[in-house]
Structure formats: structure tokens, C-alpha cells
Image 1 (cartoon, rainbow, N blue to C red):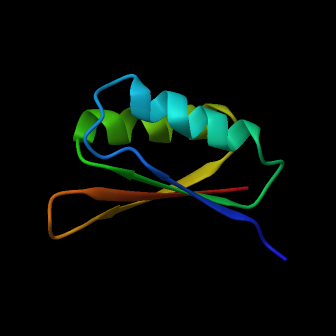
Image 2: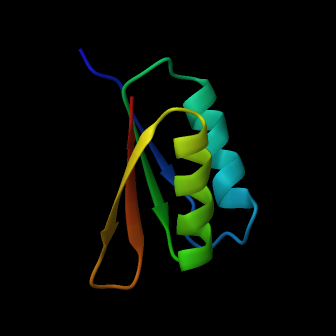
Image 3: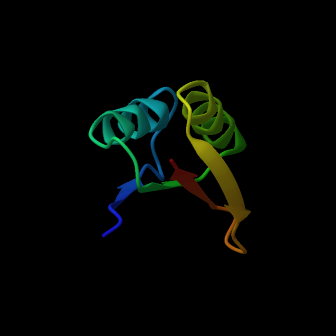
Length: 73
């Protein structure tokens, strides 16, 4: 069974979204972490954090201007 964790970091300013994503990644050895953010800066920070730590990141830009990041390992 695959583990999925969701982090809603919308409305938070940097570095809070990356810090919350880091906590979620540290809790899992593998699986999926979904991170919701509302700025390109937060999106870039979380993607960079994930990739440096061996996670693959895919980005979905939503019609409401938010981003859904799916981090997998």
C-alpha cells in the first residue's frame, strides 16, 4: 500500500512551505507527498528541496493560480 501525505501550504510565505514539505518528506521513506502552494517562489523552493533529497517532483498549475506539487520516491 502506497503512503500519501498532503501538505496545504497555501497562504504561507517562504520559507514556511518548504519547511512543511521537508517535515512531510522526512516522515516517509517513500511514497507520495502532495504539496499545495499559491506562489511560484514557494513552488520553486519545494521542487528544489524535493529534488536535492532524491524525490521526483511534478508540477500542476491549477486554473485558480495555485500549484499542486506531487513529490514521489
